[in-house]
Length: 172
Image 1: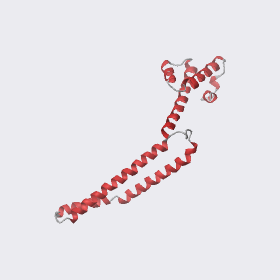
Image 2: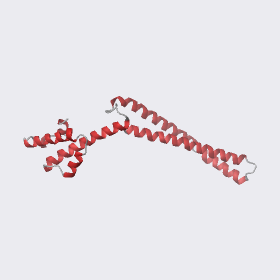
Image 3: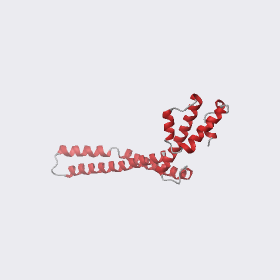
């Protein structure tokens, strides 16, 4: 998802660079028309020459920046192609895959909260339980996880001896 966001950013920057270049070329054309005009005063022609110098002064840097942006885009596209088969939700469109990944991350966060509350306080606060109930996998994943923690606490299994996230791993 990070690469997808970076890809969009770089594509926008390249397009903005093209638009900027068109404006620069138009300004140069206008300045050249002023220079070529017999109706332009000497000072107008000087200002037009200065405009051309200003507009062309960064040509090398602009060209390097555009090339670098295109190279960056090519690298991002190559990485995305390479990573695509490894993506957890590769069968889903990008936005749906992002939502599915976030749902999984949220599930892990809520399980960790449940574990911490039950071990330290013996209960889960009302607002936290409400948040847990809002997760689509509440009944299928969070409730069994809470029951697992409660069972281990009732049976005197040393929860404090477990490494961090051990219950999370055990419940998978």
